[in-house]
Image (tube, rainbow, N blue to C red):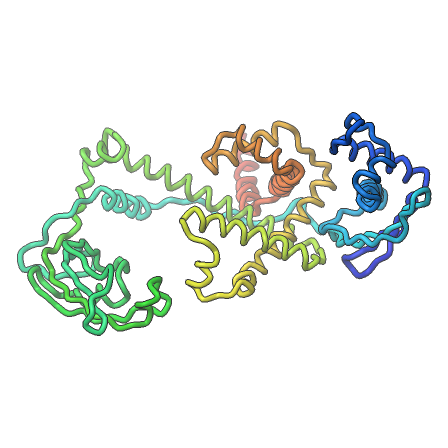
Length: 450
């Protein structure tokens, strides 16, 4: 087989492929045998009908097309391996010659995966912030716990509605004096300041007392989900039935027992401290890792074909669409709601998609350079984690991956993660280095004294 590569542009190449007649004949024979095994021809067992019979039964053009597809497909894949080309698009095939008994000649134009020029990715330096939890942090978290275990109690007689209060109200809304569907409620507990009602509604209740009535005038937002109300002025006749306020339980032994069966307030505080420290360490480590990876990616260079960015946007849009479907919505309804065209919606993802593609390419290159391998244990761990995220059985996830032929994609994904892990394991925390340097004089002094 003879292969000639012609560059169309920076990313696109045309493979001129010539398959010798002898090799093409073998491919034709295999293709006919495969085709004969898929059709029922009277008088012949499956897979045994010769080409002449197939042409008579199915038509010469159909058999010729089947043979070309088989021969060209094998030759194309062999050519990619020979030329070390990884395609990112399906080939645009131009048939040049495919007569019986002669060479099969064709051209395949394809966009190839771009070359990555790696920069420094070992020994990346970044500063990991020191983790510290103050008494003030603990006090704030205790207040949060108190709020989580608070209860509503009637406000004192004559109290006026203020921010944070729960106003128990009856309301009836109308537009141009006509009541509208969904605009009426009885004994509704509205938290003032929550922003759960139409903008401007809650603020107009501040200062009212239980038993007071008031006409609250508001304007529905232009993007309101009920189109017949969007942008219109409305009047709500509101009556305050009651005012309730949140009461926080005291932080005492009973509270410690209620929150987590702690024996004392000190034990509760110690648990809070540990949780805050764990959370802070996670955030600090995450920030450190992000900075290291950002530097490693920034040190490399790659010119990404537009088609790869568009493919990534396709993937992001599909994921967003699936999330909407889980909420009983679809993408078209969402676009109408936010008043965006599909092109405008896709444009939102462009920068992020480009960054993701660049990171994927660079991590794949590093995995190759460092000869990072993905074994069965790695894949099993990834499948298990995917199953946990989706709340599914790992065996079912594996079946789906096999059915959709996504094993190569899974291997690439795990390889990229391991490459990222390699970068992070070789990173240098400059703060840790400074601490060690500061400790050395003290160690030397102790040694001299000894």
